[in-house]
Length: 432
Image (cartoon, rainbow, N blue to C red):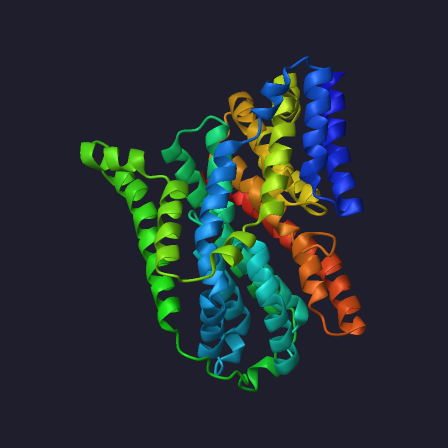
């Protein structure tokens, strides 16, 4: 009975968030308190302690540092330079849009920020070249998602933290997160190729792009890029070297002391001392809404774990479904959930905790299941009812284009992306 109430609470939280446009996290925290204290007889301090402090701190710290590049225009100028560089090769425009979004998102801007910036530019380029707006939308959306999945960017950090919370060591979690990033880089390229094959591209092959050369990077922007590059080297070098030389005591010691959240705070302090951007603007751009959603749903999922709901669900999946279907099922479930909600805030906090139990019941490689959840969820992020699709629709300049793109995203892009995710889930489960 209690498990049914918890599942109902999760569903109602998502539905209320979607219907009212109020942050899902607030509803999740409310249900966590009511169910935790009045149904499970937990102390209020126990419920409050379910707030995932480590995830909160890491996302806050990393986004704070990368916001310097956002506020002082470094990321915007970098994206413009990338688009300018392909002005005479319009046939590769969809891939340039994709990789430009990947690069900017991987530098820490996050999915929503990058797509909000790239969406109007992409649709404008589509109008100038005659390229299908659906292809441009898919390229920008997938690029922002894939880049954000990079190990030091927002989504990648959340995935790694959730995998560690599920009981896997940091080194293994880093490897799984890397596999997620690689998978979400490969799938979009295949999907974009597929869309180009079945779409008339003659118009975009015949003309150059009319993009003005951007101004050179100023000194603050150059310094920002140097700091970002240095932080990436520090954060990525330690775990990679530890995987290569696992018995080296010095590397092991250094790796044990590397924390991207704490390092980001140090680099933020350096950036503030160098006056690379206004402190108030940088703090204001921290994704507080995303933090509340992720941590709020995380509290409700912790209550579900306490109630035994997660274990019950995992046992049902492991005992009632053939092993070869489990990755596909998780991919599709993730896609359905993400159709109306957030991958970071709802899907992965809900599904990642059940994976260890499914692994114990089926013997499937956990990496396959983590990848399946993410690629399925991110396949439907372009839905007009999800955050990615709505941002793209909002960037359309007229109602006719908006209606056309709505239909193309819903009836063409979503099925194709979700189908590609399911197929890749099968291939990965066979190969690994």
